[in-house]
Length: 194
Image (cartoon, rainbow, N blue to C red):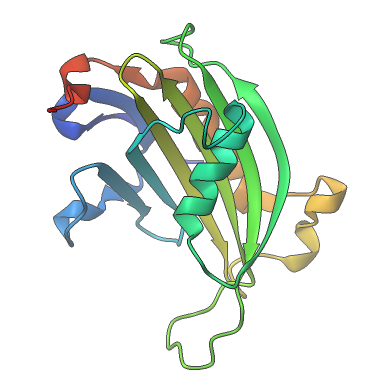
C-alpha cells in the first residue's frame, strides 16, 4: 500500500488522508459541488465523498437502514445484483462523538456487450456513513473497487469465506485511514440557505 497524504476536501473545510497515488478527478472532468472524487492513478479504485441530505426516520428506521438507503440511492435502478456482506458501527478518531457506520457490499453487473471498456466481474463497495444530525447532513464516503479480469486473481477472492484478496485489503487500509484522519475543520460548509 502506498503512503498517505493529507488531502483537503471542499476547499479545506474537511481534511482526510488519502493514498498519495490517488488524483483529484476534478482536474480532468467536472464533479458536482457536493462531491469530491479521487481515482487511483494506476488502477480502477476510486474514493468518493458525497455531502447528502440526512436520511430521516421516515425514510429509514435506524442508522444501518440509512446506510442501505444511501447505497440504494447511489446505485440507482441498475439491474446489477447486490450482496451485503457486513455492516458495523465505526469510530472517527478525530471526531469520536460523531456517529459513523461502515458497510461492505458487492455489485455484480449485468453483461454489457456494447461496452468498449473492460467490464468488471464485480465491484466491491466499502461505504462509510458520517451522520451529522444538527446539520441535517449525511456524508457518504464510498471506496469503489472494480474487480476487472486480469487485474486480480479470482481464487484469492471469496467473500462468503472471508477471502477478500489484495484489492480489498488495500480498500480496507484506505477505509481505516479515513476513519483515523477524517476531520471537519469548517462547519460553515453545512450552512443551509432556506
